[in-house]
Image (tube, rainbow, N blue to C red; front, side, top):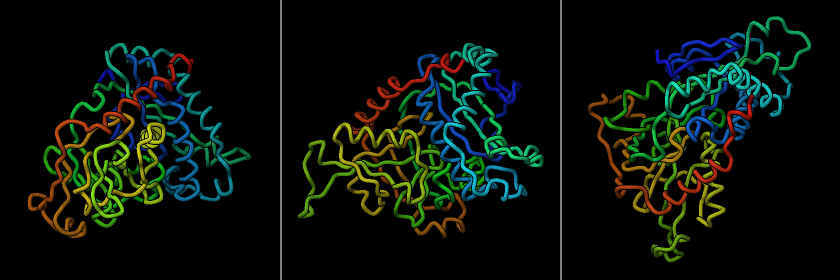
Length: 350
C-alpha cells in the first residue's frame, strides 16, 4: 500500500487500501473533499460537514441499515434528532486529533501533492449493544481516509456513457453505493470517464460519482433559437427531487449562475433535446468541474442493455467542440475563486 495513503480512527494510524475498497468495508455516510494551496487548506470543508450531517439524518430516517450494521434494532434511533452542530464537533474533533499527531502534514510532505480526504461516519454496533440514555451521536464513529491527489482542475475532457438507473436514497451520500454501482462497470465503453444514470433512458440524472450539467441554447416563443448573448443560454441539471445527490460543487454552480446572471433551471437534461446542447460538464469535489467531450447513450432501452453482451452494445453519441465552452469556463473560474474565499486552513483544526 502507498505511503501516501492512510486511515485514522480513534487515535490509531493505519496503512490504507484504496478508498473504494475502504468504503465497501463499512456502512455509513461519507463525504470526500481535497486540499488546495499545497495541502494547507481544505476546499469547502464546512459545506462538506453540513452535507455529511444531512446524509446521516436522511439515513436515520429512511434507511438506518445503511448507517449501522445490519441487524441493529431500529428502535434505538427512532424519534431521535441529530443536530448538525453535533456532527460538526464529532468530525472536527477527529480531524483535530489527526492533525495534532502530525500525520496529515507529514503525509502531505511525503506525497508532495494535494490531499484527498474522505470522512466516513458509521454506526458502532458494539456501542449500541450497551444502550443507555445516550443520544444517537454517541453511537457514531469517524474514520478518516487520507491520500495524495494530483489531478488538475478540468485537465481534459470527460467521456460519459449512460448505463444504469438512478439510485435509492440518492439525496444521501452513503458507502454502500460503491458496492451497488460495481455491476455497471461491465457496460463501460473504453476510454469512458464517468457512467451516467437515468430512470427512463432520456432524462439524464447524474453520474455515478458526479453531478451532470448541460448548457442549452434557449428557444424563443416562436420556437426559433436565440442569438449569442449570455442570457440566451440556460444551464440545466436534474433537481434533487428527481433522485440526485445534492453535491457540494453542484450547489456552488447554482450559486454562481445566480450571481453571474446565467439562466439556469433544475430540470433533468433530455437526451431527445441534445441538438440544443452547446456545452456539458460534470462536477465533483475532487475533479471540481470537468468539461465533457462526448456522451454515449445505448440504442434501445436500459432494460435491454442488461441482456446484451457489453461488446455488442450499440451507442448513439453526442460530441461537443474541443475544450471547455464559454459558460463552462466562466463557472469553473468562479468556483475556484469561491474555493479560495471559503478555504478552511488545516491549522484551524488543531
